[in-house]
Amino acid sequence: MPRPVEYDGLLKIGSFKPAASSPASLAQFLRTADDMLAATQSVMPESARFLLAYEGMFNVVMAVLEFHEVRPGDAGGHRATAIQRVAADLKLDASRQSVLARLHDVRNRVTYRQPLPPITKADAESMQAVLAEMLPAARTLTGAA
Image 1 (spheres, rainbow, N blue to C red):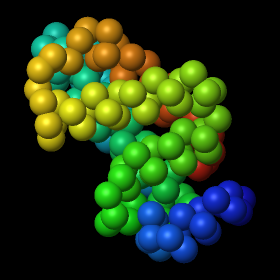
Image 2 (cartoon, helix red, strand yellow):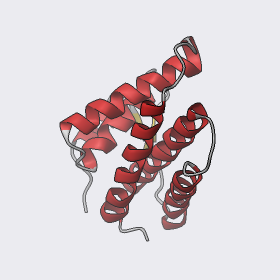
Image 3 (spheres, rainbow, N blue to C red):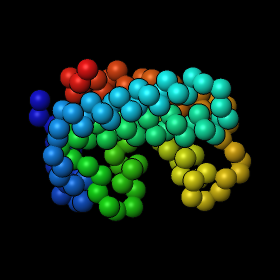
């Protein structure tokens, strides 16, 4: 399956870089995402649940990018671009893509700029739900078991 044409433009402007695709690596990204989703079911603070689910989601993003033989570039906003592109590839609806963009902003705010207000239970649950939706869609797209 050829990758969407948008990837060529993102490669051209440096948002993505070429990368080799390996079935073993792709499967490992998805296994790690599975593990992180399972771990979010344990009792833990909401901030830990959120960040675990976020990192699981980003492992899904990396799997899909590798499937398309790219990786994020080094420019600012590379994660946001990768997340948006993969969300479209996985056919998340517009409202879910909007939630994912907001959750990415929450992650950046608490990680880089301002830890207050803290991550809420609703944010943690939303991040878990997004990860749970993206995982099977990524398996279907990539054909990974």
